[in-house]
Every structure is written in C-alpha cells, then in structure tokens.
Image 1 (spheres, rainbow, N blue to C red):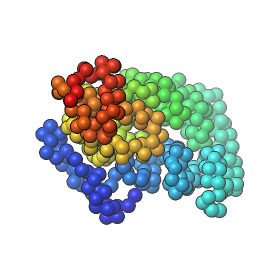
Image 2 (image 1 turned 120 degrees about the horizontal axis):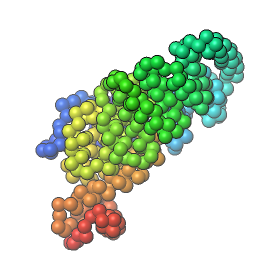
Image 3 (image 1 turned 180 degrees about the vertical axis):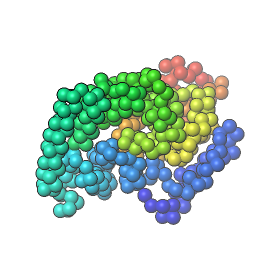
Image 4 (image 1 turned 90 degrees about the vertical axis):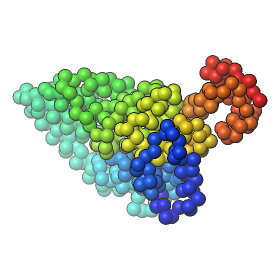
Length: 400
C-alpha cells in the first residue's frame, strides 16, 4: 500500500468522512491527527502484504501468508504472499511446508523460487543429527534423574518438533515438561508453549485448558503473560462463536502486550477482533463503558482507525457511515486466518443491533428514512424488521 501522498485526496477524505468530531459523548482522540497521516494496514484498500506480514513472526507469519494466498482472488497478491512465505521458510527448518509452498507457486515466480533439493536434503540431514543428539542427551538426563535437565530436554524436543512442523509431537513434548516443573515460571512457560502449538493445530479446547492452568499458578503472573493469556482465551472464545466472551477477553488485554506475542497475534488484531465482537454482542451501555471509555483498548484502536471510527459511528447513531466502514473492511477481514469464518455472522449481528438501536427511541419509524440510513430498500428493511420483531428483539412499531 502506498503512502498518503500516492492516494487520491478524495479517497482519504471518504475514508474519514462522518467522523466523531462534534459528538458530545464520543471521545475525541488526541492522536487521531497523527494516526490519520498513515494509511492503516487493515483498511478498505488492498492489503499491504509486506506491512501485514511484518506484524507477525515464526510459523503464524508463514501460515497467514499461505492462507492469504489461498483465499485471495488477486493473482498478484497471491504470488507476493507465496514469495514471502518461500523466503521466510528458507530461514527455518520446515522442509515439508517449504515443498508445499513450492507446489503452490508452481513455477510462476521463476527458477529462484523452485524446489531447492540440495537445501532440503541438507536441512533434513541436520535434523536427523540434531534429533539423535537430543535423544542421547535426554536419555542421559533421565538416567541421572536430573529433574531440571529432563524438563529442558523435553522442552528442546518440543522446540525441535515445532520448528520442523511436527505439531502433534511438539505438543506432547511440551506437555511432558509438566512433571519436571519446579517453579511457577516453568509451568507458565509450559502452558504458553502448549497454547502456541494448540492454536496452530486449531485445537482450541486445549488452548482454554492451558490458559486456565496458567492462571491457577500460585505466584502472581507478570503483566505480559497475563496479556498473552487473555489474547489466547479471546481466540478460543472467537473460534467457539462466543463473541461476548471473546470481546471481554480482548478488551482486558493490557498495553504490556506490545509486539511480544507476534508468534500468535498482533495488537491490530486485538483491536479488530475485540471491536467487532463487542459491536456484535454488547448493548449500548456496555459499548460505552467497556469499549469507548476503555483507555487501554483505545490505544489498540488507534492502530486500526477504521475500526475505531465505525465503533464511534455506531454509538453515535451514524449508521450509514458505520455500515460503509464495515463494507470497506470486509474483503481484507475475509483474508484473516482467525476471523474470516465469523465475518458474516458478526456483520449480521452488528446490523441487527444497529436496527434495534435505531428503532429504540421511537414510537413509530419512517421506513423510507430508515431504509436510506441502512442502505437498503423499504421491502428489504421490512423483512429484516419482521425477523427481529418475530424474535422479540424489537417491539412491533407503527410505520409511516
């Protein structure tokens, strides 16, 4: 994505039209002018793949790039994502995933992005040697009953398997360290490792279980670990479609998170996932108290101005602008590895809440005005309202 200078002025004006200035109970941000000088990564424009990938590290960076390539209908973006995934994999040891990416590239990036058989053979040979060494060391530790060394030996095995993409074996190795943990710090490390692998495997029941285990450690957790555990819990609730619980967890994430959990999530994701889940599930009071007046979360929202603006527009009853932001964001959200499956449901729930909020103060509503506000026809609006009335979410309103 180019800088602001390369964008048509009308587009930038449109992106921030119907903002929150002048609304009494919507907060004005002291840093909004600074933020708006930079076009956001997650926005209504084509995704800046390089900037997006830079938010992440490790396996999730590669998996997000592959996911983007698999779900994007722009061939240029597909190849850019695959090129970056290829380059990233060459820095690591996962030859199986490397071969899969080469297959997806299918020669479209030229000879420099083909199967490097020599490199694969060298990495696999070193992996076999490394595995033999780890087994030998662990057997010695177990013979000598050195508890801390055994813990570290299993942890090293976990790291080894994780680096090579053997996630199931990595999970088993990390969990085996539990019997040899002698401090709360060790237990938290074990839990965070198990959570990391479980998220990659899509095993979110394990995520919830190990978040709970970490939170039950006798010693107080340090703020960065608390922030990581809340992110992990939020992802587990999101996956389970428990959007209100997911919103609460993301909203509780402290500023200590920073970029420290880039192997799982970026601060921008906390803002996007938390903001959309809150809009879909919170009532007006909760939205004001837990989102708009939440100073910590406001810092996250500054990283994704469009999400910040649509929340303020929703609360300020600027529905046309709110829905426009949602429409602009949709294509890029569908390329997100965690939220893509939930976009339609979240959008439907946000729209329903907007309809309910719009009708709430009125004894009767003007259907034409309301249809204009929600960018739909009167007939289409009637169907939506009938559904909400049937579900007892809106009382039967006289129309005029």
